[in-house]
Image 1 (cartoon, helix red, strand yellow):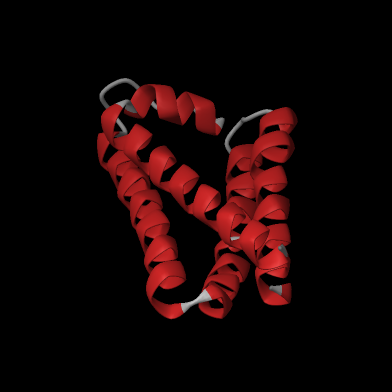
Image 2 (image 1 turned 90 degrees about the vertical axis):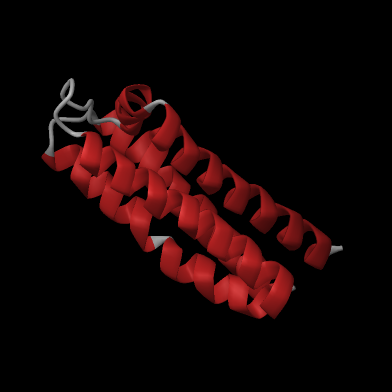
Length: 123
């Protein structure tokens, strides 16, 4: 039962990261505002594209690891990937974003990813 929950949770997180990446590619200004640091009009397109590609690839890599390598590889991946939302917390705080967004979205995401990693290790 725990394995099924951990597996499903990992798939949801990977798909969510893929969705976030696609949102940065398709609606970059809205995605940046949701991230907590609004982008300048017509000024940050390259960086928003990089973020979109980065997140999309992380979602795809997570799914590939889970389906082709296994739960243990996905657990290690989640453990490492949890660093990204931790650093996103710092980025938002250092660039004028609110504490509510930094901690309520990014730090909370890091905690959720770490919980998923633990569940995968226990599965």
